[in-house]
Each structure stands twice: as structure tokens, then as C-alpha cells.
Image 1 (tube, helix red, strand yellow):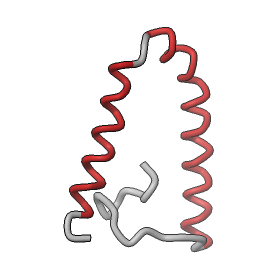
Image 2 (image 1 turned 180 degrees about the vertical axis):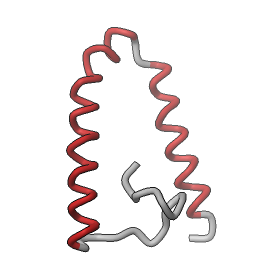
Image 3 (image 1 turned 135 degrees about the vertical axis):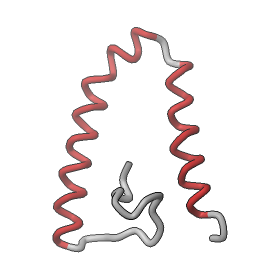
Length: 68
């Protein structure tokens, strides 16, 4: 894809804009589960990178994982 890095950045930024439409109660309610899942996904990503389970051809930055 010709504009793949721009598309990755745009998708990341646009997903964070949806937080503005969520209410304060919804954020309080789902924050613990969101943090828990972020930690689990990060741990799996670290293990997968060491064992070479999968890889990404294009990332936003060389030091960032494909999972953001």
C-alpha cells in the first residue's frame, strides 16, 4: 500500500476520538477491563516477538510494536 504509514497513524488517532463521545460513567466502568486487556495483549506481543509467531511488515515507528 502506498500510504500505509499514514493510514496506521490516521486509524490510531481516529480511534481515540471516539473517547470524546463516551460518557464519564462509561469510561469509569470500562477502564479496568481495558487496562487489563492492554496488559494481556502486551505480554502476548512480547512472547510472540521472541518466538516469532507473527510479524508486521509496516509499523509507525521501528521501536513500536505492531500492536498499539
